[in-house]
Length: 127
Image 1 (cartoon, rainbow, N blue to C red):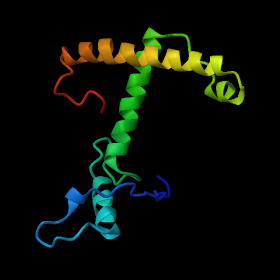
Image 2: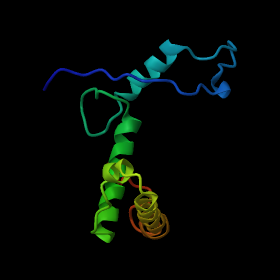
Image 3: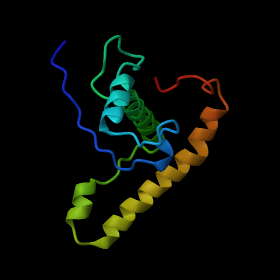
Image 4: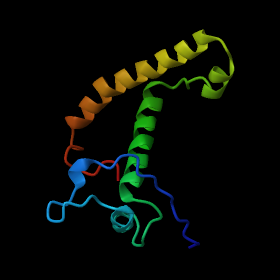
């Protein structure tokens, strides 16, 4: 359906526990490239290779689903973050932070507990 667009990844931290016990060597760039390539073949919604790793797609779906839950409970939208940070007034920034904290606390305590107690448990709800 189009030209595939390659992604560019940065390894931010290479954990020392990733060392191969047989060779005692840390993974190199080719190892990460190989694992990432293989992860691109695991996306359940596509029958072809996707352009970036499946965990990134699933995280995007999870974030979108969380956004929809929040918008259903909090119909008023947050202030435009760019306008808050463009102004030098710290009260706008603290107001935005309070709104975000309120939404995160509600989601973590209320929505997630409801989802855990329903038929969604053990299923691929976000796929």
